[in-house]
Image (cartoon, rainbow, N blue to C red; front, side, top):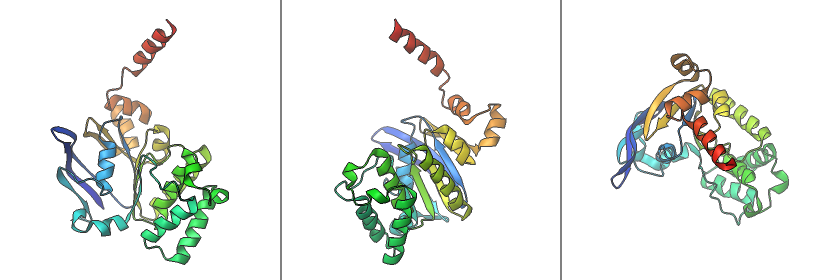
Length: 254
């Protein structure tokens, strides 16, 4: 299992993550929710091995990942929030590069690239440079790159960003199949409806602290609220959003 144990991150005197702890187990799809600036992306980058915590540690199967970070990263598939890719490469070339770096055997890599490009509707644009891709097309390439080496752990920061409805449905179904095969999946998303349908368990972070960690059904029952959206609003102190919207509409029409 993957464990975040009392992890904090500070930039100078500003601590953006405060003693965050949770466990991700095989077969789980866990949603990680929070407002902008709450500490989500910082947590994700620490889990991806891109940032070192100020204190605390990340463990895989009870061993700190820092003991052999390269071995840990070989088990990890990661989709960042921003689609930073080598735009001079084509979609096919980019996946070949990633697959080669990941050590996927050439024959296996060819078949996987073909299958992923076809599934994501990119086969006719495989030789087009990523600079000419739309945001959604680049997001598909990032997802394909994260899946190429069949990782044990998937850390996905806003994976549905820019995707069309058909692709979102495909990706959700794919994640469910991968979880059933024992993969560990953590997803940050602002799309609460998709998160509620996909994730059996959610973590909510607010102002750098994890304020909820439970099954969605348990949170509904405990808080006597019918939807994940209303639970999120309550836990992250967004109760005045309707009043604020009304005030803004009145100002704009005044």
